[in-house]
Amino acid sequence: MTASAPSRYTATAIVLHWLLALAITGSFIVGLYMVDLPLSPQRLKLYNWHKWAGTVILALSAWRLLWRLTHRPPDDLPMPAWQRFAAHGTHNLLYLLFFAVPLVGWAYTSAAGFPVVLFGVLPLPDFVPVDKALAEAIKPWHERLAWVMALLVLAHTGAALKHHLVDRDASLSRMWPSRA
Image 1: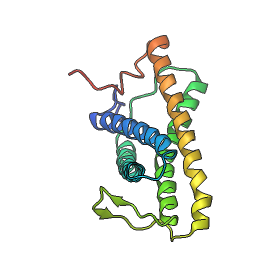
Image 2: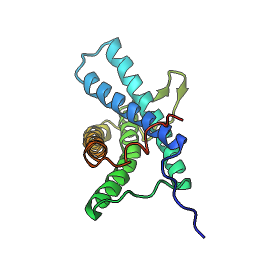
Image 3: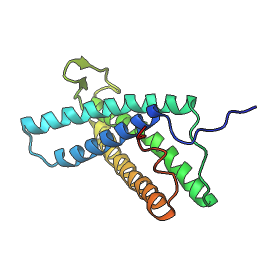
């Protein structure tokens, strides 16, 4: 006999979802802002913050994936097959990008010769050896992947709002913190 799926996500899944949403959005905005700054202490500070955020996003993503693999999500709500396919495809691509964007960023900063020192105290190993040509080849991929993730996040958000406001189903409420 199989256990039935819960009606909503677990508290841990909800917290991880919203923490990642805030961290990814904040890191994306800081990334857009910092690249156009002139070389200054402020720019260096923001680059370090951005690298720290990427490291935290990577760790939270690993925790979220492990949680998702070990905890059954709520059953799918009734919707057309194409919407279910789009939702699952978007979620799978987002999970892939949760790892790809920070790892490509880490590879870029390592190849450029700028180590990641988490919170200014914990040096992380270089992901790839220092190689300026490799850094220049990797750099645009971090940006491109981040933009793809941003577009998928917007699509995900738009779909959630459509389900909540137009379809008036429980999609959004299953991932919203409970009042109880």
